[in-house]
Image (cartoon, rainbow, N blue to C red; front, side, top):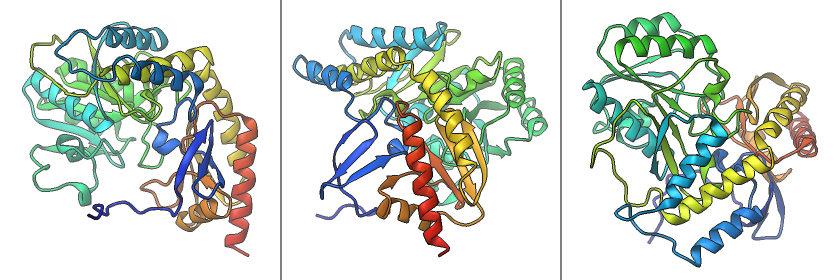
Amino acid sequence: MKLFDVYPLYNVEPVSALGFEIIDSKGDTYFDFYGGHAVISIGHSHPKYIKSLTDQLNRIAFYSNSVLNPMQNEVAQRIADVSGLNNYQLFFVNSGAEANENALKLASFHNGRKKVIAFKKAFHGRTSAAVNVTPDAKIVAPINATFEKVFFDLTDIEGVCEEIFQGDVAAVIIEGIQGVGGVHVPSAELLQKIQKACTLTDTVLILDEVQSGYGRSGKFFAFQHAEGVEPDVVTMAKGMGNGFPVGGLLIHEKFAPRMGMLGTTFGGNQLACAACISVLDVIKSENLMHNAQVIGDYAMAELKKVHGVKEVRGMGLMIGFSFDFPIAELRKRLVYNEHIFIGSSSEPNTIRFLPPLTIGKKEIDILVAALNRAIATLFS
């Protein structure tokens, strides 16, 4: 049997990893500045993470949500402690797409509407409703396009608010920082004005923090950089489990649950909770949000010095840097010649930088030197 071939693959086979280093099947070392799409939040094979999962495996790995699981309550309390969001309820899922799917469903349950406002260059996942609010026609099947959506530029504050005030919008969904779209940060003014318009019209504001959350921006969630913003729903996933598949929704306390409203078989299982608890412990004990801010500032300053870089955008350790040429060949040279993993985006000239939150200045210097060498070979 063959695999269903939908992924363009680099000819590298990782077999072990520690911190921000990955060892391949040939014994070669690679430096990870992408974290597998921002998933590796506390570094590969962190000892506290390994111990937590191992200990839990030796007790019980899984049972369904038909029984008590106090570990879920522990995760909820720890998220509240580190984020400051005490007036929310936690619902577990397994992925970012599933988190956004449930958020959109919850919004429609709440106000009985169907239309959704989203943003150009956004990415919210590949499940049915989530992909319908992702503006990429080639990944939207006809069966997905079952409700009206309207896409706006991140700068079109007036247009977004005017659409909300039509009174027929179920939800506005916006990333705390656009990831796949090339790392674009929505302005505080946009988030604040959307918040106000949503409150006045009973429209649900969904903050997609799947990639930008869990300390990556220097705050626990990127929207927290905008003063006074309080979303109705916050979705999260990637950094939650440091590689273990887990996602979640933070649902404002004004939303009342009812039996059967949402559901999941695997979400919030015992092993997933063990992963979440260890990640939150490490983020707090190692002060990784502060590290993300400090090292992120250093990275942005150093990346601006790289030959050919035209723009550097982002917050903390979620950075996009653009060139005046397509970066596909540059990424190949970084992988094969420099042994550097780093990300692309839907913008062909933009590289995404999403490393573990544990990295330091030494690792940034390694990346900058590798970039300069690889760029030099492109034009030699």
